[in-house]
Image 1 (cartoon, protein in one colour):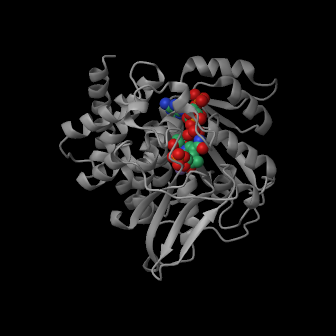
Image 2 (cartoon, helix red, strand yellow):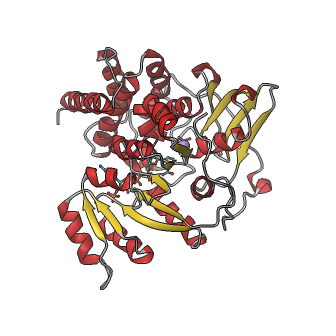
Image 3 (cartoon, rainbow, N blue to C red):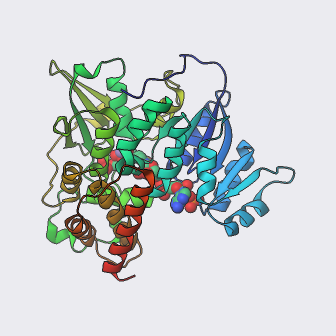
Length: 397
Ligand SMILES: NC(=O)C1=CN([C@@H]2O[C@H](COP(=O)(O)OP(=O)(O)OC[C@H]3O[C@@H](n4cnc5c(N)ncnc54)[C@H](OP(=O)(O)O)[C@@H]3O)[C@@H](O)[C@H]2O)C=CC1
Ligand SMILES: CC(=O)[C@@H](O)[C@H](O)COP(=O)(O)O
Ligand SMILES: [Mn+2]
């Protein structure tokens, strides 16, 4: 397995962090974790994209020497918002994220940008042999096969932040892979669990964004509503943990208090339970192999009363099935799946297509595709780009 840490336990020196996507939902939860452990971490860099105001607030509190944003306009806005006397270097554009991800001084890169834009920096961190606290699941969906090879070559370590994978990692830690029979990824079922296809024709953007248990960014919230999030997570688990796809299952667990389950060869199952708060997996990844205390409210089991499980309704939410199919069909299919999904989700959020057009566009893109070579980052990014253009042309924008 590629995720054995080179760090010694109970390391005393402050770990130097680069936080990519600091202005997002995961980024903000990360900053709350840091506030509870000010002496354990030193922030070298914070990177947002367009939210200059939030980045300025974070930077004013943490004073990192480097900041990054997507455009010159946002950089100018950011500069004007910084406190007097604090003059960090402000880097601009996609290359800035790559440069920060491979900074020699950095111990850990937290990769929390949304979408395929997160791939080049996460890949640069892997090539530079960093410890990567990975929230950006899309990076593994597109290039999991390349990460595996690069981590092996450079000694880079991927510590999963995605709650299910972090839970699985906790259940696998200390075990040889021959001890593990099956990984069971839990799914909330999203805001439309139990709905019929007829019901789904009518749903609005606001209904789709209203996740029953988690507060998250817009794109992943829509992915949860279509079950594409769970599909992406199956592909993520496949690459992270190296088990055959047949040994990875999904079960709907509407309460989202069991974050995932490891089944061992003797058929015992270890379920990871905890509050539905991303501070928990973030702190585990940043502190690993130590476990950092957090001031979260405990899970009140008596108040919770009951937990339940059911099979995912793949006939109503076919995106989950498309992800399994894409992984079986060949290495380039998940790239197409992801690109089509990103364009479709963006169009849905922009009011240009209906909810059920998301799975329809993904299916059409997969059907139109024949397997191509994706053995380099450039080839992956090229396929990502052409798929986006094709799906945009279908939508008509
Ligand atoms: N939120 C959650 O609870 C979970 C999230 N994840 C994964 O973590 C990642 C982040 O999710 P989340 O925090 O919810 O997303 P958000 O939309 O809340 O935040 C996205 C972050 O990425 C930045 N960003 C947006 N576009 C670009 C771009 N083109 N280039 C560089 N940076 C960009 C945003 O900057 P700005 O806002 O400044 O424009 C922001 O910092 C996703 O891959 C998601 O699947 C995984 C598990 C749980
Ligand atoms: C918090 C987290 O990790 C999300 O990926 C979450 O799992 C989304 O919920 P769903 O189970 O509804 O996709
Ligand atoms: Mn998840």
